Image (tube, rainbow, N blue to C red):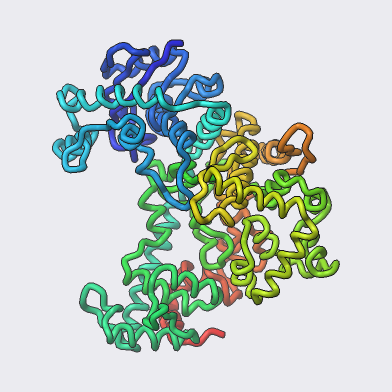
Length: 620
């Protein structure tokens, strides 16, 4: 078994896909136990890698091997399919799963893994690595002389530490599957998502003008101070903001101690309660500006490269494996809020393409059904039935019309929620919540036993394995909710990944985003029919937790073909006309609630005097 350990020094990681062939500067590699060798010849390195039976790198799929693939033609996909790659970042997370709810990234850099496994790591000065120090000294990672002695010593040290760490990491069938998954998902970064840069800049200018006007209005009408680092936090500023909230028809938000609450989460919750209040939306925008918060539009532009594309990072850092898409964070671009859905419209298909989104249907609940093997519960997912309506019938004496009332209860069942949590979530009394959960437990006894057994197993080991073999860490004291939820979410994640692995190769390069249980592709318009058929075929299948288990059908829905990402949901969000790109291109709009007209259209700027009045106009 010929194993190659490698690490590459490059330019800035942010320039991985845009820098050019000189991005890879100096490589270190070692074969088995042999001494580390250094080279600036990446073709030589690729020949060494191709000759290996096994290639080991830390974060290699996302970075080192990705760089060699991008700029030097290494066929990483073939190596992954043949099981030749070992990424120690993926293996470390598999051997020592992350804590739930934590980013946990610092525990999985090579230095931290070395300290944890072998009591040794990289040499640093005052907590700063030698590499970062050199980058500061020479003005960038791509400016460090490749013959600099400390630069070369640092690289040798990395390869040697990698080799020592790898000896302690187990690789099983699930870990190899995870390599295939992450290689495919990294196509999202490789190809990038095209950005409507001109529209983003226009909206940002409109937003800035609107906010500045609103600031002046707060100053002139309500007496908000304009000087100082945080005028909104002064006594006069707080009084001014309380009056402004009142003029929006809103009771000013308060902290538990009664102070005015202007934090990001408090304002977001307030907007969720009053989604149609445009005056409130403007006021919150002003407060966000005063608090120094970046808008989503600005964040998208900050991450847009010279090719007018964002290339978000794709990672599986959560304990359940749910995918994180960051830099920019596409997850925050919601579609449930009318004020936010237009953020998605800044992302476009490739020229000649259309965007299509595919969403797994109630996949968390289906995952739980596969695990618990309760025949009655599985029956609610049979083709032609609506899961939430079937649950309503069980809960409310056959009344399927109470579908919306059943939803929070079924979510509580999926996530192991107790009566207290359900009461809060559904807005009902504790006694009623207890009765509903008891009714479900009686109706679906194997589901109730499954949840209880998962909690007991988590209490014993603080580790659970989903249906595919993924280990998931459960925090002490939180087993009641975390154990069932982790099994549902972790299995749902891997059901989605099974669909990703089943995609035909030509569609893998079309991947543009993955958000929760939804995947977005940019496909040639002339092949849209083929794409829809093949993606649905990949995502939909019969799933058995074991060979002799009762199967559960995994189903998916598809969106409209969109001219931008928001446009995909024009049928689903038909009450919000601005979701459709055709509507945004109209010269006029009669919908008073149209967020595009009120926020970003040139007509809104032309009537800024009317917009000013919004700050003190009561919205019912």
